[in-house]
Length: 182
Image (tube, rainbow, N blue to C red; front, side, top):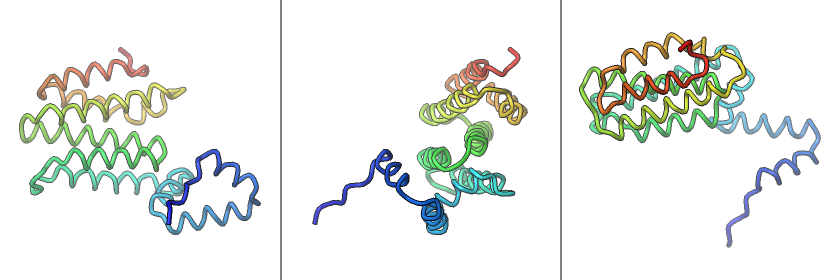
């Protein structure tokens, strides 16, 4: 028995155009009930009361486990990357930005508390902070920047002396954010 060919996004759109609104509603509700990822995405998308805060809290807990000292592989940067990639796929921009920034904050705190890490650790922090800045720069106004401004300023300040030039690069990325006053 051969593999079933999956629909492309274009084919799915075509199929959905041929369905009634009631049928589409039924499909979405079934997905919502059966898939944690669909549930996360739809709650985030429609800003169900408390959904953003709950999502952010859940993802921050997942990230903090990656930095747990009792974990032999701590910090588990592959797991952190997987968490950040997941939130990018299934959450709205505000949740995504908050989780990305939490990752950079936790990584900065970890290295400040426990000493210099390896280059790939710092590259992960820098890549995430760079993507965070890119998302902010793609916004039409400074609303999200202002929401995160205090946290951004704190991570820039606390990263100032961490290894491999990471602090300097975080500051450089910070100055590339179009909403900064500098």
